[in-house]
Length: 515
Image (cartoon, rainbow, N blue to C red; front, top):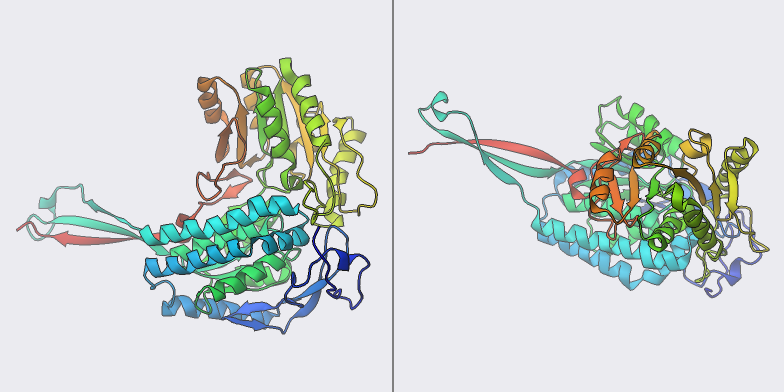
């Protein structure tokens, strides 16, 4: 467990127990300000930062004023138009990005503790996954910045049809930065997701106004400071804090924004898309999911059980690609279902800052109540039965939800169709490959899907059946989130991934005489 500190709560009081959990220097700023044009801006309204493990408020941040949001867009627009970053040679941009990666690795344990404190995810998982992927995102982006290139193509129509008597046309296509990006980031993995998005946009040469989620501002605020120290010119990355309904709305309706990128819920995606239409601003949306994990009887069942448990309960199920639906071939249904429930029952539940914790609190009590509501309604309606839901340890706060496995889930019910975004797994049997495909594709989402089978032909066949942007075979999460990402479908949104998502192609047609 981390050592003590005595950060003051946002309301001026000191929460009992806070001093025993947070080591000195963990929170280096109170309140957390905006980052605008390379300087900290402090004109906003004070808002509390809540520790989901305890419900205490040991720090605060400033919600940006309308004037500060406007200044942030102006700073990004100026930095892009003057070319201070986008015209910097790729190898020089790569040096800054690699310096950021090195700085994250050097301060990895503090970043992991901050992410655990801020979001409720277990600190050990944050260190092994989130901080690792955050640093890797900047290293990957640095490599792309060094090697980015376009292509050249010859025209395919008869050259004698062109004026000048027999020339040919050579087309040079080159990627250009998309411009000023409004980056709206999620609360379930702000450091990892934010690093992936910001690093990719910077590698492309964009300037950015990023809005961290209102419920988790700390690690991204620290990342913005780190990037400045790594050599990023002022104004290239700006951070504005506060609610989506005010700060976010102002960002996405500003005509000086060239691209809007949202990682969030489907409802938010619809609102962002409607607002962006006012200025015809391009939008990238990575939204919700209800990903199926399909287990055939010929699979390695021990492997499938381990992955199904991980897919459903890592990060407390607060993952857009969480394997929240478990479809099991009827002949092995009971074996797999009870295996997953037994594995989930053994997961350590507790304080996010405890290195032993796997299941920490959800982001806040309101979201935990929402998750519990899905379970209670399903049970009351007879849509599911409890297979496993271990009793929570004594003394935990209201933001904690036990890892819950529900079996016999009725096809088409709310629990099977809607994204719960919590540690709740909905399991159901199937009799045939065709039925499995129908159930797997039977929601409005199309983000991710997984199949467990030893039959290679079935794996390819079922991957073709799944209507989603990414398919996993005998695993659930890709080992490197910087590569191999598909494009969402249906209510899961639409977006490209990586550096390409932040570029646009310019074609230059050159007439070349043959002699």
